[in-house]
Image (cartoon, rainbow, N blue to C red; front, side, top):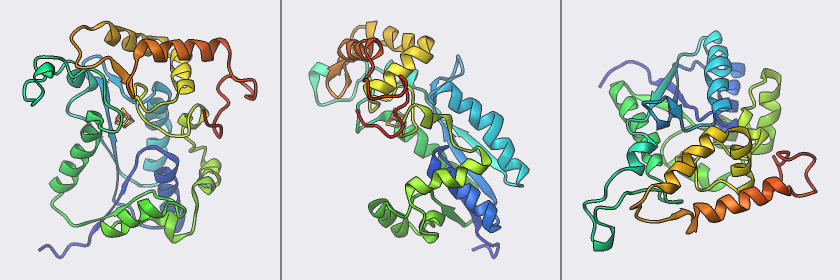
Length: 265
Ligand code: SF4
């Protein structure tokens, strides 16, 4: 066993809680050896990330340079396989005869293949460091269930240590302009094609990134998918109709079409 001290590593998602953890570490003078972020691809060949383009721009052009100016090293890890791979993957090994030789197709909410693509490369990378490390995780003080997991794994939450709840993370980030563009149109970060998104988030996608929406339209036209269920059993056409209805007639309570940071639908 090496006598070197443990590396302090922050696992950064780009979301408010892990970003606030980096700010806290910086303000508290905690020596952070490495910030690690794992980014997914929609299509690696065409260099289309899974995160919304404005989030990618913010990560690379603003957040990473700022962290580096604080003396923190940032390691960007990318998924091996992209969504194109998983969408066009032909199912061979299955107990269900009717699924054999069909395309995996749409991601399944709650069993998302891309999740593994995010987590496994990080695990591999941390293992490859060949050093003991202490992970700092962005879980707020008002998330008891998730904190139980943090404690079990021997990770540290600076937000918990400082008694900071989720809503307070915005106050930590605001002075550094470190609130991700995600929060302009969603309460949670993630992939622009994620089936867990709400109709209003897909409406944002279609309105602001028609070229990405068109990728989903293309997927929808691909035959031989194992299921036409795009979002929890609903077809892409069913969701697309709801998206169009939302765009044509946004709820009147909103101040603007996409002013729904705190509003559920
Ligand atoms: S955000 Fe959605 S699509 Fe992306 S990895 Fe998570 S569950 Fe899968």
